[in-house]
Image (cartoon, rainbow, N blue to C red):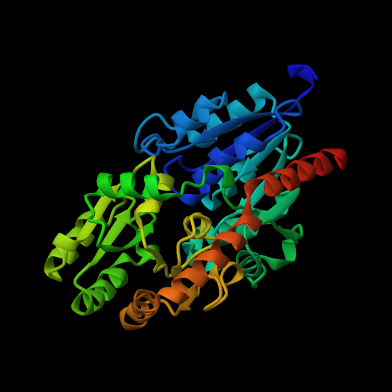
Length: 376
């Protein structure tokens, strides 16, 4: 099939940082049928560009729509780009730019498809209602978990406008990218400055309120009173980093907590951990948790959003209620004190995580593209 005959598709996001959604986009490219689909990527915020180089390295053209902070012309640039490049499909991935795209792109233009990665409850009122008002413009809507899909069907501002049915597709990980083994573990601990005798609990995620790292730090205080060898590793960056570092200092545990910042080698660094924790207040479908499970890490996670669809308590992980440091510490302490439970959870988690490879998700996505175009 010639380049002229391929279906031109634009994936559109607010930013291309190292969040779960952006990492899904970068990894999904590997499994797209490039003989059928000519995919390009556009984003709005130029300072959120950590994944751009990786995406471009896969041969994908990336367009940044905003030239500087405060530039509000990106909707017009999006419209110009869409009609200049003659995309057949514009596939949006974040709620704010998705709502704007539906408003500025003409109905006679490309088919619009949207993937929702987060529960609507956590959106600002304007974002939630703008999406409610414009959702009917989509030819197809995908949710990354049943919890996300259910949050979209609650009554909102304009239910009478009608919406396309929401299909749940679990967007997992590139299972070929999983890193484990003793050599990788030793190397990762060396990078992080951790001793072989440390019991290392780690987490991955942007340092934002929804991830609730403060509760994790408070739980760490409880654990460190009981276990001298516990260390905490927090991978990721974000607006709360200075506040969280100050909190660790105030709690008296700064010398036992490592903030790595944003790193491209997270799959390798996961091998340094003995357990993984997710303390979030909200989640759509936590990719970092799937990665940790695939690595064979026993995990403790808050029972929010799509997490209970992924984990069964005391089977392939431990589920706890959000926002409770004592309960979170209790779940982690159970793993520390019970090696047999750790091993059983580890084996089951590694097996179950294989169900969430990206290959199947991308194959279904390509079928949706074909179905949407066939119906136009």
